[in-house]
Length: 124
Image 1: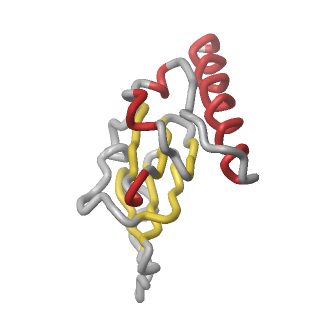
Image 2: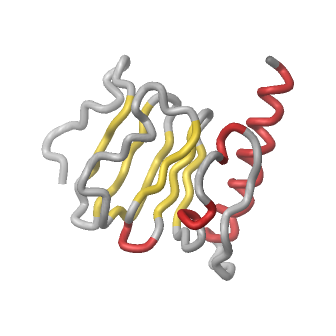
């Protein structure tokens, strides 16, 4: 179990380093990584504008504000709801994911054991 944890941490570090480059305005490059959390087609990550790394899954925003999700998604945290477009912000939790739309609304999906997907009203 410890070796698997180390691999997941290393994979997240690679994605976090790429995320830091985006945050500080560095030139855009494809995201690279390895381990259980990087089972995603390379083409889906070539024009990433935003990344969020969770403990077991990752999210990226690409062209048109479309979210690509990958990693362990047993609670539905990788099942981005439709319409999957116009997202400007993302957050990868442990069993859930959050997306901020261009119109200011928040979308939550995945595990909701602790009401983490129950958004307060008004959601705008």
